[in-house]
Length: 484
Ligand code: CMC
Image (cartoon, protein in one colour):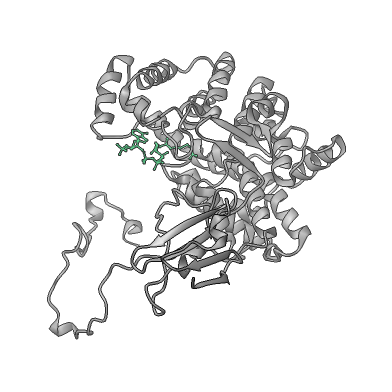
């Protein structure tokens, strides 16, 4: 029997036998037998931790010149892109653990800053370690005055996520040494700075939209209390945060701190794998979170509840969803095929917040919408349940936050997750620059045509190619800003 064993590019063992027989390794339990019907070749591929290495398939060729098989997985629906010790999710059972601790227990017993420390360093800190961590975070909440000027440069109605994305990226220019990602102190300081400054940047963006003066951090307040002060302080000498709101925010932030390889975390790891500084990598995470299918969903949930207006309109709305006219925002998840445990915990805290702020009338619509959707076969068959974004927006609205701040409220705590994942990636010996492959489906080897000889083959999209004429007399864009 012809047989050869070779070391694959990732160090895994791949064994190739002929069509008639399976190699001795083929009898091993943790392997996959593959027959390439194009050639009749049989291969044994190692299975480790329930995965096969995509690179093992590269050896499967029709001839020597063949590139080899690739895995095609456009949305990473079934691709593990790293090993991680940080967050465990069992989507079928609705389980979420940070470093092995159940999320409900952390929400009950812990604080956001303690959880951030746990995510980053892997163990619950001792009292001394926790005090030191809180001291460090508290003393890095200020930002350079030029960042303030930078925020002032945005239009009065700039989306706060756009401002956050830009200011986090801009931090890299204030801390150029952060590019030394092999330096443990630099890595640690970048993490501390981002967690500490994110609430400051978020509050500055909020106050900018309102045309209010920015409020500097207050070191005598805790992490959520300081954020509330930077958001809402007016003429009082000292802002006194309501402890119930502080606790509710803290719980919300624990819930949002990490969620393994979601879109934004994958973006942080992917961008960070180029060895860029961590501020730039986290800015990529903020950008990914901005999208309505990710962190932007909480904003969309409230817009949807507003459109539904009353519980009477829910049946019509759900018909529209089933006819694919729109999505039920805040429902469904790539990983959870059960009730998102975070949504369950948030739901419990909604009432506590409403005790302080007064009830948000949209709660009744949300509760009824959830009930009817869960009773409906369309959602049951597809295992669509409320996710973290379904109820969080109701709390943010009760805190008088405008809808475009909701995703910012997600970005603040997710920063600790991004930092933890980035740190883990930099220490992982398997890390290489992320560089997916493609299946090329375009034209090949065409002869260049001189412009005079070309026929129009593509219709420009509507509006493209037309010259925009702005008429200041008609009140349109006198400064020509839109034409820039
Ligand atoms: N409303 C109506 N139908 C839905 C929804 C929804 N919210 N979500 C999924 N479906 C349907 C979808 O149309 C598909 O049906 P079919 O198989 O008949 O074509 C089926 O359910 C499977 O959905 P999918 O789009 O293949 O699932 P996905 O894993 O690619 O997408 C998702 C996951 C979260 C993007 C999606 O459920 C969604 O768009 N939800 C609404 C947006 C949202 O709430 N996002 C926040 C996610 S949680 C916070 C975070 O981590 O970002």
